[in-house]
Image 1: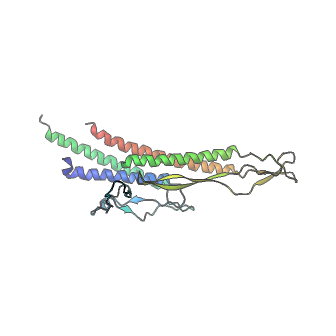
Image 2: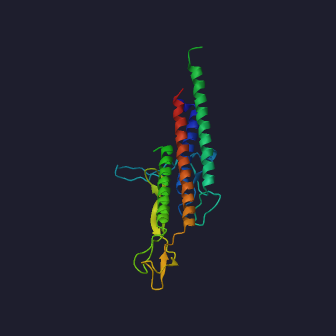
Image 3: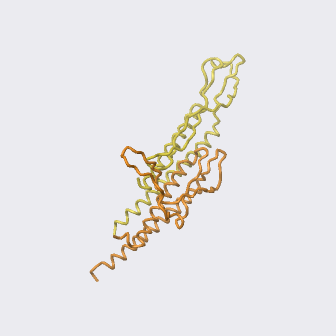
Length: 130
Length: 137
């Protein structure tokens, strides 16, 4: 029911987006010493939402294998320009990733607090006691 | 699987890889003076570790894993010690190609990457906890 309220739907998407982005940053950090690994990231939230859902294969038989490429609801940034490229071809700069992760966590906190505040506003409206 | 626990699993694979790297460093340092026992025999050869990313279908993300543990093909230094059992006809003993300075640098780098992975886990946990806290009121 509360999905119909615009703020909850948007905040839900924002939290989902930040979660997926955190996964990508964790992936970059884990591969910080993997030769010729390229950093991955999502496009900024304002342009990340897909207006057209990506096409997926239909499985008509439970034995069919469908390529599961994780959450594809958000647009991926294909050309990530990192701060530096190591001699091994690795593109991950730990400092940069830490900043991105801290920024993501801060935005997540903000979205959560907005959600909480909105919930308490709704409760104030719905409460019968005056 | 939701994104937050996927992030934790990926960072966990990073922790595992980096701790294996520190293990390799400690093996090298511990064997920095392990010499051969027969005349002219090769001493301990420095070990190296290479990582690669591996796509995990269940997570839909690239984890990190150890590609191979190799050996450093670098030349051995010679040290003059005619009394040693591994000394060759000229009285020289081959020393392991372990450079303590390189090992220490490698260890510091591994520690730094380990801490970065750890802080990713902490942040993911903080995010999950703040969402759970929505249930409070």
